[in-house]
Length: 161
Ligand code: SF4
Ligand code: SF4
Image (cartoon, rainbow, N blue to C red; front, side, top):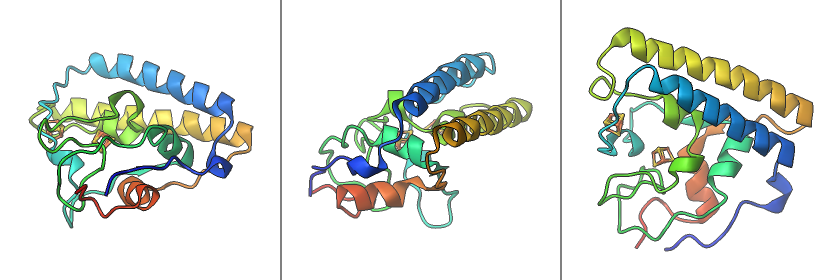
């Protein structure tokens, strides 16, 4: 099944929240460069098999990510993020990916443990800023697992066929 829908308009966060989110992402990305990680884009951490860490994000991030439905990629693992291209092993929503997507580095992508911990701290700080933004906008925080939400939104169980 191919993704066809957008998030319900009733869930759309205020424009201020989306603009602030973009600023937070840009500043976070700049700070991450200094840590020297180099993701090899293997896509492994975007497939989420049972027992693996779960990717969480607040509603404004999920809504922003889902603004454009995933392309009709070939079949992929049922638990995989619908934006992960199973052939190229790359993210099909790189500009809109969540804080967790941006700050997760495996030990191959970022061998230094202290750098990985620094990335984690940057994530926490960005999340705190985002919490303030969401509060100021009166939007819902709704911190929830991303991938099941995307599959529910786009109406497929992970395999696009
Ligand atoms: S962080 Fe690691 S596991 Fe994830 S895509 Fe990059 S290289 Fe692959
Ligand atoms: S949004 Fe992109 S980086 Fe994040 S889990 Fe999905 S494919 Fe991976």
